[in-house]
Length: 262
Image (cartoon, rainbow, N blue to C red):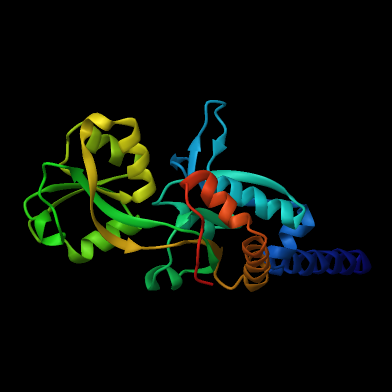
């Protein structure tokens, strides 16, 4: 009886050690072990990520996610996220990487790590041609649509006049819709998103007013996952040298990726 109890206890201890070891595996080891990577991507932010007529995600970020999976030799699971929940998805292990028009700033660097940049991006303010806006001071007394938690929200909040009426929406579709429907006078968003909106709605007479921030896109990695981050960096560097990043940017942004920070 004592021997049986000792055997059960030993097996239980081995089980705990085994499970602890599995839990301790780094993200790259887990990805390569299961031959699959889970990547968070946008589906409300054309041309970086949106749902096509076939109801499948497409865009620059989706192509970049597929490129990384191909170079790793693993299958890919795409997980749609919004600006507000993309970092929590990474922190809670719901995604191995976030490729979702993610800009790098000191606040985000406290909670996640970043690879080298993979595509260009900048945020700006847009409004009808008849609305006189040359700089941030001209937002005084105006209503401005912005996506909650996005880089343009953070930047605008820092510099907007106290009497600017900033309307925050939960995703980019809602933000753009508020501007198109006339709920707000001004739109703060990524230049590519605004360009897509203006192309679809020429009757709005919208135009670029001023830049909020130049902010290339980086890939988000969970804090401390250095093996995965360095492996993805290798892929980015090789893709840059081979001209693949320029091809992706040209395909979706009608301009090459150009010089990007590492």
